[in-house]
Length: 182
Image (cartoon, rainbow, N blue to C red):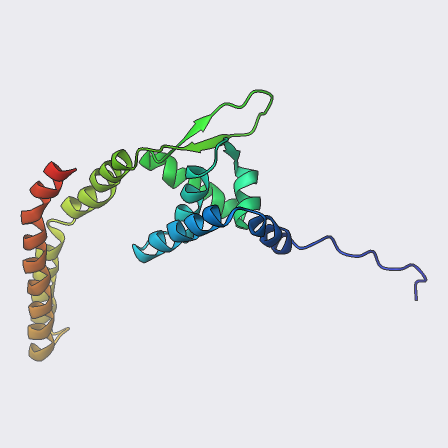
């Protein structure tokens, strides 16, 4: 047996992140949380909303390391989140004299961000899926002819796909209004 005492382990990153978050103003914590919850509710990573919320209320540029520490998230999550926000134009890189790290600030004009996300994320994907439902219906017909689905299953699946087509047509009718509104 060794007579040496074991060194105590350094504080866990989660514990230090929790302490860092608890030292932040309540307004910032609540805004960051709201941003994370919003993104999660629309199917985006929670960290994307948290990062934007943190940067939006920060009066100075933050590095990736600052973001990780203040939010208690991994460098991978912070990196993915900042790349997504950069792609949407929601944040931008800034140069900080004396530092070689990337620093970020939020773009404060939310209307520009909403327009860009709508055009580049939603509308582009919606238009790309235009022929997909028709292709699925043709594939379903082929599956029936090949005996891979019985008549009952064929009818039910076809009804569901046609319901999706009708819903898609309704959404397609309002897209010009959304375009004008944004």
